[in-house]
Amino acid sequence: MRAVPGVDAPRPVPDPIRAAVAATLMRLGRQRFTLSAVADDASVSRSTLYNWYGDKQTAVDDAFDYLAEQFVAMFAVAVQAETTLAGQLGRAAVSISEHRRWADPLSLHTTDLLDLILDERGDELMAQSTAFWSPLIAAAAQRGELPRTVDVDAAAEWIIRALLGIELLPPMHLDLTDPDAVSNYFSTHILGGIHGQT
Image 1 (cartoon, one colour):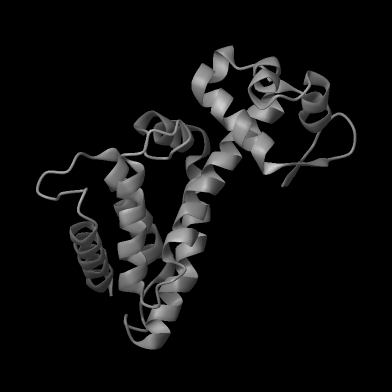
Image 2 (image 1 turned 60 degrees about the vertical axis):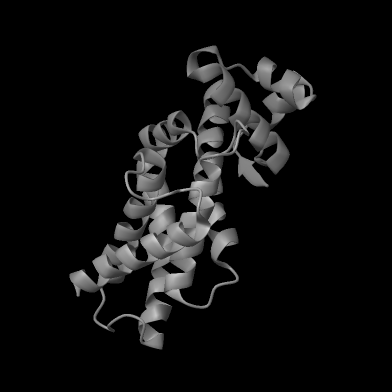
């Protein structure tokens, strides 16, 4: 849940409602988006939505925040079982390549969706993503996987830029349907880039 300033005191908006707001925004676009449409999609009353959000713009802002949060959450789920940075990078790459093939309208593989997030919340998405990867990089340096002199912030930015390329650029020599190939390719080349920075 996330507290969103509304007409009265901020109230926590349940994640299913936030997801419905984001889905409606993606389906209708910013111009045609209305809280009435969200109410229909989420099977809640318009007054309930207005109590949570207060106005359309607040709902739109929260939808973009939600989408950016979900993108970063995807990494968290993917890497949690891995104990090395190489494994974490490989799992993150595989999770993104799998999202490219999903048909769910909220799946983050959709180029239009990612473009929209980057246009509206690019700075926030980069900040959240680098904040997620920075401690993993620092831990890898402590374990000896990376030089202790690694620039953690620069390496985190390199990681997210490389991973976004899975969504934004078509594959040329890599089979994105082969999880082992995806994992090996991106972990090898991303780590190679980090080592090249040190």
